[in-house]
Each structure stands twice: as C-alpha cells, then as structure tokens.
Length: 581
Image (cartoon, rainbow, N blue to C red):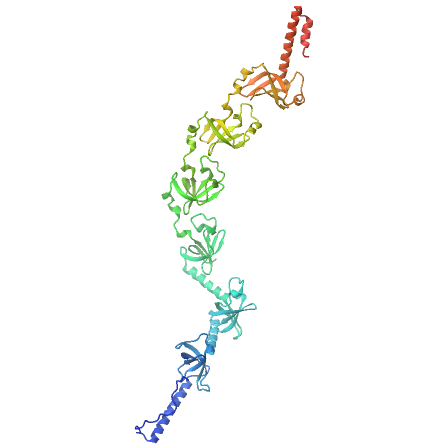
C-alpha cells in the first residue's frame, strides 16, 4: 500500500545516548505527538468532502489510479472512471468523496468532478450563448440524442443541420458544435447545431464583406453549374461566376470549363453588401487579349488557328485564347459547292486562314480559308478557252438545264436552249442521266461571277442555216405528226426541225378540233409558207398544198383539152372553176 503519512510510533533512543532522564524523554514524545496531531488536523481542515481539486497521477494499477492532491496520503480513483488509461504525471480534476475510508485512505472521484465541472460549463455556455462540443450518439423520435460533456441532450431533426437531411444515420458518431437552446435540469437539455452554423455563417459573411474589396482574389469550390454560369462556394455563401467571366474564349457550355467540386481562384468583380451578392470572374486574372489585337494582327495576312465550332453557316476558328473569328461557308473553297463546313473541316483541326476584316468594337473577325490557296478561276479562261471542246460529268439536272463538272469543284451550265437546235421541250432532258460523261463546247466564261456557259448543239451544224436551201418557201414537204394542239399540229420535216400547221391551214374545209381529223404519227404533205430562222419557226399549210394540187389539175385539163380541140370553150372554163369544189 502506497502511503504518504508520518509514522505514529515514538522513536526509541539509541543505546549510549541516554542523555535525558526517562521522565524527560516521555515528555518530549508527548510534545511530538501533540504537534503531529495539530498538523494533521490542520491538513484535514484544508480539504472538504465534495470539493474539487487538481491532482497528479503517481501510480496506476489494473483496478485503480492513485493521485496525489497534496494530502497526507494519495487518493484512489477506480480506473473505470477514465476513458483512457492515464500515465504517471498526468494531471486531472478530482472530487474528494471521503477524507478517509475504512482503510484510512483518501477517496477521490474523477467522474463526479468531471460531471460537476461540465455541468457548470454547460450552464455558463447557456447563459453566455457559447457553443459546446457534442457527439451524436443515437437516433430518436423527432431527432437525435447528443452527448454534451457527459450529459444526454436532445437535438430536433430540423436543428441538426442547415441543409435538408436525407439520412440521419450519416450524423451518428459525428462530433459537432452545438448552441444550447434550453436547460431544465440535467435530464432536459435541448441543443441545436443549425443555430451554431447560422451564427457562424453570419459572422463569416460579415467578416468577408468587412475585409474583402472588388479586385481581391479569392478561392472557392464550384458548388453548382447552371446554364448561365456557376455558383462558387466561398465558405458560408455563394458567389456567381457568369459564363461571360469564365474565359476570354466564347463559353457555350460551362461544363467545358468547370467541374463540380473543383477548387478555383477568382477575382471579385462587384459586391453588394445589402443583398450579400458577389460577382466573380476567372478571365480577369489574365490580360484581355483584345487589348493588343492591333499589335499582332493585320488584314490580308495569314495566321494559324484551331477550329472550335461548326455551324450551318460556317466555322469558328480560334487564333489565340479569347480571339476567335468566323470562317463563313462562302470562304471555304473557290470551287466546291459546300453545303456544310463538316465536308472540309472538323473541330480541333489546325488551319491556316487569312484575316479578311475585323470590328474591334464588336470583337468580330472575318476569316477566309480559300484565300490562302490559288484561285482556279483566275486562269479558267486559259485552261478552258471559249469555243474549245471539253469533257465533263453530269452532276445535276434541272428544269432549265444541266450542270456539268469540268473538274473538281468547277461546273458549267448546259442550258436547255443549247442542247438542240430545235425548240426545247421537257422531253429533251429525259435522254440525260446523272454521272453521264458528255462532250460540250465552251460558249462563254464569266470569271467574276464564276459561271461557265456550255453548248451541245453547237458541236453540230445549225440546220436552220441551210433550211431555206433544203426547203425553200413554196416547196412541198412531207412529215409525221409529232404533237396535236387546239390551235394546230406539228410535223417533223427534218431530223431536228418541226413545222406548225395552223388549224386554219389544215384543210379547205373548216376544222373545229384537229384531234377529230388527225392522230399522232399521221403523215401529211404541206407547203412551206414561211421560215423564221431567228425565232426558229417554220409555218406550213395543207390548204396551200391542196390549192397547189388544184392548179396542177387545171393546168393538166386545159393542156389535154387544147390538144384535143385546139381551142378553149366557155364550158371548159366553168369546169375549171368547179374543180375541187
């Protein structure tokens, strides 16, 4: 047993030192005992049961911890009152439970000391509104039980956090700071973590607006990404980072630049203390690239850039971070008919372009891709001179003609009027097919408007030039009916030439409907009445042909009659007039 007490037995005199008489020695021993008794009583008067004192651990056994509080003997504390086994020299507050037990030892309690100290601390925190630490120990109806300095307190579910709680199990075992809402005895304590968080939030917000200014650089976490930007968590409130302030580049999607949970540095652009709103910017951490645009770029100069976006009307090319220009679809190629930029470009391509124009006030740049390449139209008339024969492939057939590709990207138009010498019709296009190779003649080149006129009929002799020689006016022609209209019929008189017989010239008799008299394919003889080479019209007449036959018959009758009689008679003349009637 460990002791720290004075021996109560009187000391015996050593042999040979008997300088005092027996009576004197006994008197001296009585004095010592009286002095010890007075000191012991005085020491006891310094300590009271229930008093809390500080002591030092002097020994530790499996069952007890011995603590020196400055008393005549060490006090004993059950080891189970310690959460962790202490070490020699550790200091603790303990309560004096009993000055002396049956074994004459000082009885101490750490648990009771802690409880008393903590209870006073708890009441003081409640009075002064100070936070206390507590551990969420279990779920209970309507909230959770919390161990606060060894006392069980209740925290309502709504007071456990500022944000909405989805699972209270996430909080069990966590140590949090609480504000005490209510104390009504040791068994009725109500606490709030939410209240602590709200007060801390207010303090931190006020501190932010008291210490920060526009232009300061702050660090925060990307809390939420929205269509127009992102909210940055600055600790206890959010700042807005707008899309237009994320990068000098054009920001079409915030998610291409930021990730949720990412830590970013921002510059404070503006602060509204009343509404507690802060606008942030990232691009403002670097210089505006447009500030030195005129020092680096000139019109009609070539530069390299990266394709960042494709649209129906063109492509956007970034010359450097924050400086982007439009490459219009019309500026992609000198020759190709491009329907969408994806035919020649893709996002990420590095291209050489020419700076065509810019507007610094609007930060717009016009770029050209074809301008960095030779223009084939500059030498088109040398490569394909007018009146030269060329071969090409049919790429498109329209109601007004045929487009023929001479070389990649360069097309010429074979107009329907230049396909055949005859009057054009819809059927003339039916003999052509897409992809068909064809030989044509270059008729005209318009370099400025990038147009080439081609001809097919010009490869053969113009039948209209010699038509009057082959079929002079007054001559009789034979042809098959090719079409019937309400105003007459057309007959084919040459391989490529048709003539019109008007309804009034179809017979000596009146005809109301040509289809009642004629049908397609009928062969007709008619007289050439007129040829208009410029208008490519041939006018024919069956009536003239019939009249021509009558005159022939009259001439033959008179000739025969004269041979028989040698004279003309009145009756002969009358007969002639009645022929054909």
